[in-house]
Image 1: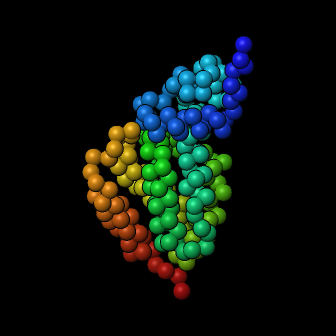
Image 2: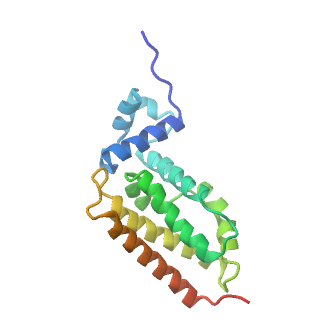
Length: 188
């Protein structure tokens, strides 16, 4: 009798992302992930407590990919522009995850290392550190919302051509950034 496959959180995450990409958020269930891993659903509960923790695992993994693509010390505008683009490109790679990110907050353990990077990016603006975090979070919500409009019906392709979404994304992000520049004076 063959031994059942061994699983861990990494394989659980990989199978979940594959499932999201293939079937969208509607196809994500503990049973579906177990089937993809060729294990019994009960074995998944050795690694996550349920669907809510699975969604958190997915959200944190996607956010870590976003954060890994950011460069510190570039100034607030290049940093925020890169943040929005990283969110979009990461969700383009895993379109089914857009719905998960839209409703699952990043965990503190994943977000906290980004706090000094955000503070550094905003160091040339006359802005409170808390407001800088609110701005980065607001832009993240904007980028996730735009990605949800573009990819939210995964696995179905977007309803409009990519150029449509590219223009919408550029217009929304640049308008957001222009608003920050107008509202918060640059320190000399």
